Figure 1 (cartoon, rainbow, N blue to C red):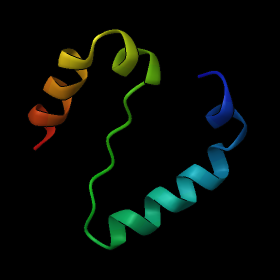
Figure 2 (cartoon, helix red, strand yellow):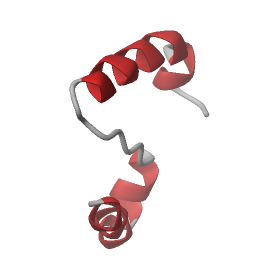
Figure 3 (cartoon, rainbow, N blue to C red):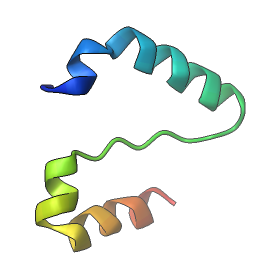
Length: 49
């Protein structure tokens, strides 16, 4: 993992735990995929639903 989130793993994990307790599911998709292949990113979201 590189970039912004590699420096925030602890904070991200804490936020993810809080969101899961509230009933949310967490799906991480790389920005690169969204920017280069939006249909594939959308397919990942749909598959997770």
